[in-house]
Length: 191
Image (spheres, rainbow, N blue to C red):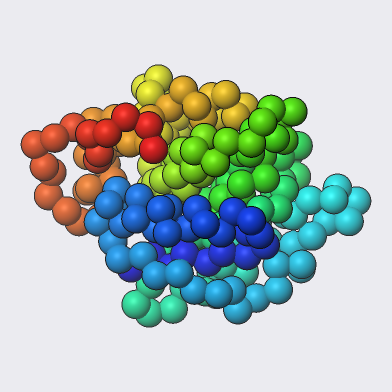
């Protein structure tokens, strides 16, 4: 099971049911939305005006109680790690916790008109990407694979919301599921 823990999501809370469905379909897990039992403000860095994603990951780890094997935090705040100006999300490699933010995924952040469809696609891709890291997947070099690294939001738009054949095999192995004949987790384009 995967615990979906939204905090400071605001007006984007309508994206959560679709995100839960995408994660359930992609990883073959039950997704249960739960309120946070921690104070996200503890991760706020006053000097940067952003939230430290590493601190949030530590807090999210405490959300992982049986029967949940993994936990994904979803937020609307701006995330950072000390060596980068910002991150779209972060995860523990081969661990149990991940976090993703809508803050830099929204078109209006870049002076463009709001697009709920594009925001939904970006959030789905980044959430699958971060949860993929918890299954031990590293960044992939395949151009369209959801595990490809994204430095800019435009790079997220170039990816698909599914794994390449190699990453799909690895995630299935990590999940203890047999390999299926299809090379993709999802045959639909986009999110």
